[in-house]
Amino acid sequence: MGNLGKGAYGKVVLAKKGGKLYAIKQIEKKKLAKECKEYQAFVEKELLRKINHPGIIKLVKCYQEPKHLNYVLDYCHGGDFTTFLRFNYKHFTNDMRRFYIAEIVNVLEFLHGVGITHRDLKPENIMLSKDGHLKLIDFGTAEITRCTILDQKFKDDIEKQKKAVA
Image (cartoon, rainbow, N blue to C red; front, side, top):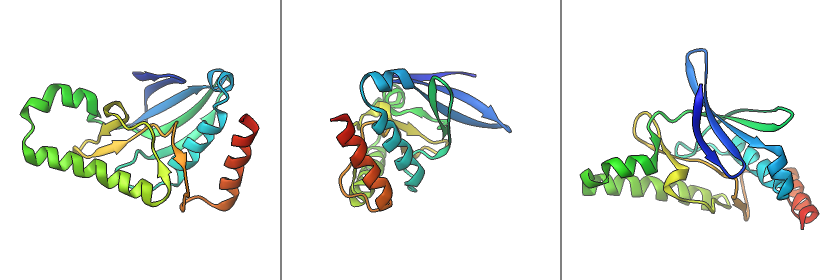
């Protein structure tokens, strides 16, 4: 349907199925391989698959094509936080500032509590849902320190992939 954004390893496109909108993150396999970042894509997929928090984007489905990894994500109707700030910041009340800061802190506390560091927190990686709540996106550089939501086999696989790349 159209492009929503572009990143270092691909793009995000808008798709519609059954009357519902989705954002599909299309990651170019060739770019991942060139920079030995395949394990990061694996980590991102698994984290999004396992994490259940209202402030984190939902992974609906993943699939592969010959040239792309595709992550089907819930679409955030409110757009990205950068654009929202650009057009609305002058009209922010102290209550609005406190609300958005609290939402960001809530997500970060949750992630750190389960042993995940996002590592790329910026307004471009925060989206707004239809009801005005924040959703953290892009776990492509996330670091797992002591993740309690992942099973041991997955943790072992990550360590093997890290060592293979090093």
